[in-house]
Length: 165
Picture 1 (cartoon, one colour):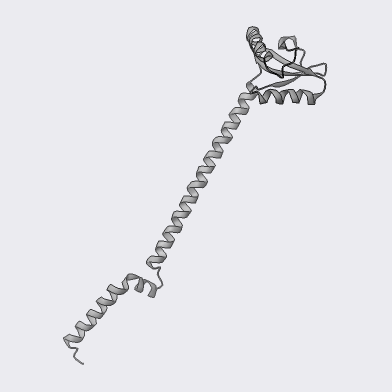
Picture 2 (cartoon, helix red, strand yellow):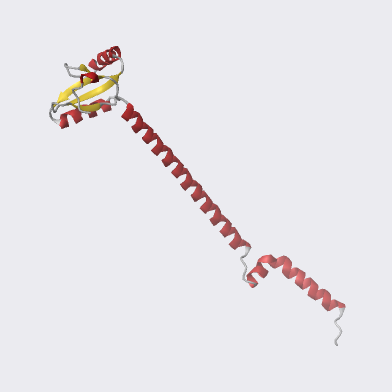
């Protein structure tokens, strides 16, 4: 067997250490088919972008759910609004589209009007309703100040049963 002298061993050792120092782990990782540090950084950045996108989608979904819940509560409130005994009637119409026009005019003013069908075929537009007659009269005084208020505004008592159920 041939004898390796100490100088050769040192030279090989220095060369191996130099290769390791100057090429780093990426050289060896690429030799065995593993991802390099650049590949791992790119994958890390992609994972961060995906996580950010997921957080944004979750936030949007939460906001949409909150908006849907607010809309449901508003619709529920509007369905409960204007259901008292005494209705402040802004108009009585034989043509349903005229009642709808009055209703939309009141909605633009911030009211929650309701169209009540009477047994005689007329549609009346109730701007508001109250459980107490005096409250309906006070509201009627307020409504008289509106530009769209007709001269024949009146209070309808549901106990008269002139309306359809």
